[in-house]
Length: 293
Image (tube, one colour):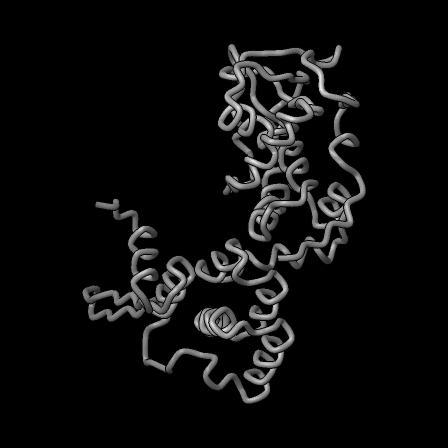
């Protein structure tokens, strides 16, 4: 999935330290960095990246093996050890792939709020977050740091409209967000799907888009057609249900990412959750927290 990366200010612009670079491999860390026991370096609790691709980690490890760790980790002290602000992929490559016992670090002071902001922005400045991870990072900056869309855009060097569009992806049903995170559906296609009238219609169109390999333009056309014909086939079948039941069905659909029917009679009834394949059923069971046998 292609990502627009018109990035202006990087992490250097946010930090009160300059990050030294080595022009060639060297055993010793730069003068302003120091070697520490790699077991004392903990990952950031505000890491927006949900998945670390093993293939890319191996590629990074190969580069580090060949050239050394040109850019030390940026950390802060935490108890008797350290906590990563920038460089968790480098940490994982050195620790998990290369088996290093020590790693070069630059230590800086950072309160929790500043740490959270630096960790999020540092990851947003790098090119391999998926669209949903970017959207979640933007939301974290908005909610935790109280940033406006304009503030976020200025910090990470993108347009305000791009921030707004990415945040809109968080309105999609869970299954559609999963398809975006897996790169089965592009962010542009997902935004086009937001034009559908209901979460169920969005889910149906997303599945069709993936199965048939629909382009973003085709998805936009289908969404526009549904709007022009009054939303036919875009809304669930009309049922006479109380508002609280309809609201519950909508909440469950968004959580499970599939159609859910609630039959309620005087506070008793049943909940029917639909699935469309064995893999889909497994996904739902995991979503319910059922442990694997």
